[in-house]
Image (cartoon, rainbow over all chains, first blue to last red; front, side, top):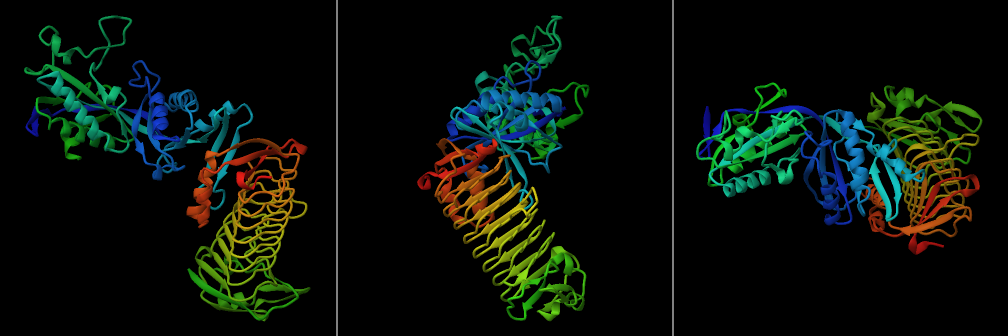
Length: 308
Length: 282
């Protein structure tokens, strides 16, 4: 079953999302260059929990007039399978990639009223100050109460908020863009990513937001728990048993989306599909699911397009 | 808010101790009952109406009560003492202990405020548009903790021992302070935009407490160690808060300004900070 959107066939199926814990932080720095550098470093090697400790990505740039310290900022989101795993990943990545980066500061990007838990990330990171760290209090008894740590570093001082908000989130939102040529599919996928980045509350953890390999659970090798998504590989579509590549499609790229809630992920899928189907050469859109065996979130392509 | 106007019946050299002047004590009562509340005039206990005229509307809850003290209240002590909510506006000078031990709500004094204003304050906002006396937000004698929360802002200058034994909260003096500012301080923040008094931070322990001498300091105790001159990022957060939430517009001018960082009081192994604006450093 399929339906047409912008003249392109869209399979009437769903992306199967699963629960993860997500957090958002705001990294600021003396210039956009260093805020972006820190964010890029922190979100590196965090594409999929298949082989990474977490999934992470840059949500958006934050203008100086919207950051707590009035400097250029970047909103980063990190996802982990549990609160503990998320904390571990955030702590190590913040410690190695942001604390070390010149001029940076880190602020919580998920306020307590929106979070399910507040994680003691800054509180743990403070020990790097080796006893010379300084607790900073704000608003006690008269305004919004906030806590920070000032950690002395060789360049000056690293400022980090004591607690970072985390909440039960949704991972695994996805759709596949298929087309006649590799060039057309790549251009369509790029258009998707540009559109998705206008939706708040989501990240696309893969390189540039795109995953060209896809993945399937298990492989023919006992030692390998995941392998390339053979049913969607066009170059073996007539060799592999049960290929799902439609005739006329010679390239497929997957867009993977994590978000702080199901509605955001669904909306991101919708704007992504809509953007992709406007690019000439795109012939087919579908989504990956496991017949409901992997996760509890079923995000239909039709619903997602209706959500935009 | 329901407004109740209190008009002192003239100035008296004998102090009037009127700690009943709080939204907490007034809310839910009739005007007649409020007039009959007991105050101390010298060594006599009298009805408040004998020295203060009361009229207006009484709120059901303290949070909805506005009290306006209309006139010279220099001789009236303990206005707003221990209040938890609501608002008090003194349209002239206020006597000693104004807002002492308050934990919520806000007080504005249009004129000057006497000694011990905001002493042992726990929460809320206390604003003095004129000058404040000695021991602003300080600990009462024998107490180990002074201010533990809330914010005091003085548009003018303040006397000696400002913020003594301060534990938490914020204090802002736009003018100068007298000697021993932040003495025995163990937390909290004191911002002084005028010249900082001598012997500031004596016996201060630290615990995140600091004094920002943005108008310079006449001296820094020798038991404070000079560390470095830098533009601390955290100061931006405070300066923005001062400008946006407290109306200290010129605070934004200090964002990114280099400060000399002193750490002490080493006489007691403390780790408090005195941050002196480079231009005014000794």
